[in-house]
Image 1: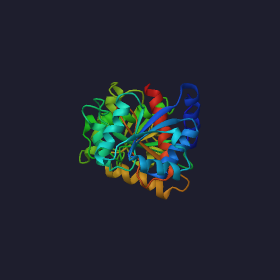
Image 2: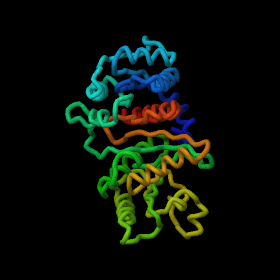
Image 3: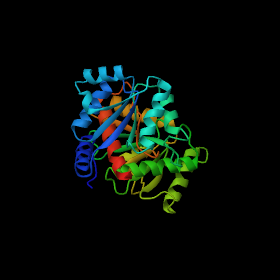
Length: 309
């Protein structure tokens, strides 16, 4: 598969994959938002997905109509209790009647309780993490940022799992051997900065085959992770420096601020996000996200679902 280098290309590659291997099915918890239905309808028309919509049938049908879609194209499951919507929707995925678990209007805590339910949830035995992925003008590849939304202050073992989750997702988008930069404020090991010690450990775990199918380097500051000239000036000899695909952040505040700064400061950029490392792809979009971001997240989840099949 050709490497996806922009999020517009992501949609085209997802369409090709679904044309040859078939559509995937979304299971949407509390699908009572016309903007969300509009994104799902766009993805359905592109041949990417079918959808099961869980929620109050009257509200769901009103949103379908508002989105200019047809009820006949959707499977609706009645569940008026918000706390139960996540459980009903996730059971569709864990039972293999659907492939992707997606958040609608219910609160995030109810959605995540469904995902983590011990009996019908999507636990995989691995650390579950979040990945933002971006197209940025002037950068010739998709940039992946992990973890800026789910794990707050991961320890070393969790960090290794987060890196592996992100590598696996990047590979589903055609990045054969992702280059992973372990970010810090500096590019040298400083015993007073624990994240630089963790970066060194992750590099060694990669070399020993504990983190697979990628090249890990760090600590690296952001400038020399993504800018080849900055790396040369600082005399950093590394296959990752200046060419990173994955920006692995030491804690949630760094990743969250970095991802949102791209969204709001980088004009012309596009951003999407997924929860990865679960037994199936999980789309946790914000109610404030534009339709395009939701569509891109669906396309990424479809690519990932096909790679896991």
